[in-house]
Amino acid sequence: MASTDITVSGLSRVGAENAEYLISKIRTIPGFPKEGILFRDFMPVLADARAFGVLLDALEAALPVDPNDFDAVAGLEARGFLFGPALAARLGKGFIAVRKAGKLPPETVSQHYDLEYGQAAVEIETSAVHEGERVLIVDDLIATGGTANAASALIEKCGGKVSGFSFVMELTGIDGMKSLQGYPASSLITMPA
Image (tube, rainbow, N blue to C red; front, side):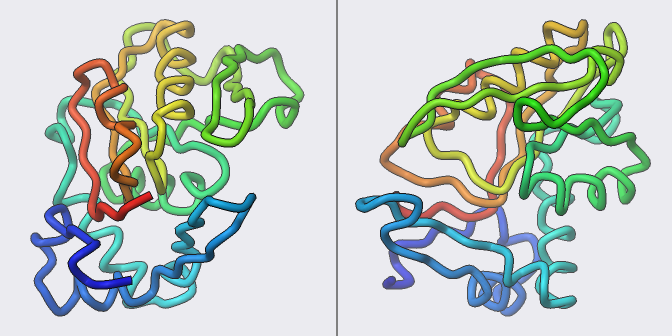
């Protein structure tokens, strides 16, 4: 992929050298999970201490709202679980797990949504969000916005308020950010879908 295909405005706060290092750890896998999809894999970032540190620094620096404007961080399964708790701990916030359907034994609230290649559902425990709690939703990637909007609906069903969204990557040409109903949102890296 040509470097001109990648925009790193959210990474600019950590310096050019760190931004380039982080991007060098993201790999693209064509044809997964089906033909025509480019899978953007940031798992190598987590395997590298420097890259993971840069990722957390960048996410914190690029928050779409002030940390005083939210009480908790919600991460989406699976990759939002990998950096969401670390970001929450850095910010002195609690963490709310937004799980794939059928993974939680207590009473849950569920939300179905469309993916670019199918349908799915996410759930949270009914007691995970407190009435009026302000929540920042984080995930590794926004494509169509289906998962992010489903998480937002869950937070609100449980009495919480969505403060904004924070993503590592945004796939361009799919308009997922536009689907977020005007909520404040940020992404570190934009790449073509």
